[in-house]
Structure formats: C-alpha cells, structure tokens
Image 1 (spheres, helix red, strand yellow):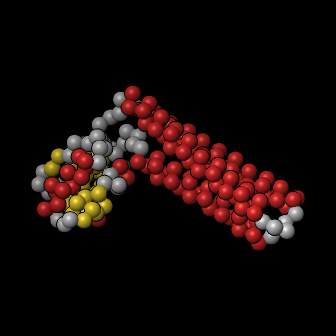
Image 2 (image 1 turned 180 degrees about the horizontal axis):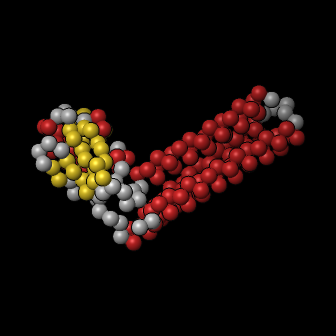
Image 3 (image 1 turned 30 degrees about the vertical axis):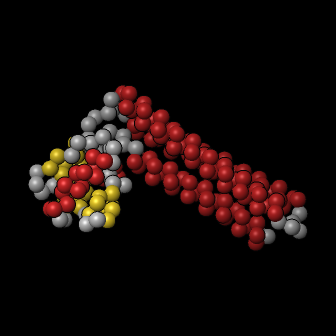
Length: 184
C-alpha cells in the first residue's frame, strides 16, 4: 500500500511542478503592462561572470508602461544595456547616466495574437508533461509485484483523475492569460 501512495504522490508532485513551470512561462509573456518579471531572466556580464540582472541592479516599475533599472554600480550601466539588447526582449534601453529606462510599447493586435499563440504552445507543452507523469506512474504500477489487480485499477483511476484535474488547470490558466493578453 505504501508503494502505491508513493507512486500517487510522485505523479502529483510532477504534475504540480509542470503547472508551476507554466506559471513561470506565462510571467515571461508580457500582456501590455510593464512587469519586473519581463527582465528577470536577463543575464548581465558583470566582472566576467554572467549575473542575473536583479543581482546587479534594482528593477522597479514606476508606471504601467515603464521599467526602471538602477544599477548599484554605475560602471555596470553599459553591460546592463548590452544584456537587454542581446536578450531579444524587443526593448530599446535608454540611460541617463544613473539608471536605465525601458519603455514598454503598447501591443498591436498582431502581436497580441502572436503572444496568445505562444501561451497556447506553452500550455500544450505542459499538458504533455502532465500526461507523461501519468504514463510514468502507470509504468511504475505495472512493475509492482504482489499487488491485486483491483488495487492497481483503483490507483490507475486516481492517477487519471489527477491528470484530468491538472489538464483542466492548464486550460484555466490559458483562458485567464489569453484574456489578459487580448485586453486592450
């Protein structure tokens, strides 16, 4: 019995991790408003080592269309600008000698559709991960010896219920993200 519970917990853990990954992926997809998460993955070449931008500067959002980056070391301004340009975020950084300003342009209708398509792709990838977790759980069940077929069928049904729940969660996340993206 304990082995069955471990298999169920393992499957559930994998599916929850997939949903967390989806949330993280959705944070990187901008929806027309400035957010610090838009630049969180930018790596700055700082004293020869790639360093996350939030470790070399204070990143803030003064208004809905602007991201302000204030480096703790003014000599890093050039490296931060270069990292933003190389990250292909689509922002043109401007600096005033003390901080870098990123103006977030309003989204065009085509760009909104493109971002919605990207969100849909991330959702489909997450669903695949959820289904793979189900398959791995069922494979582990088949490997067990000395467990009645009824118990295995019950656990398979439980795993399927988890799969349905997490696939529905993916769809719900997508609906809310699409609504956020398409909102003008």
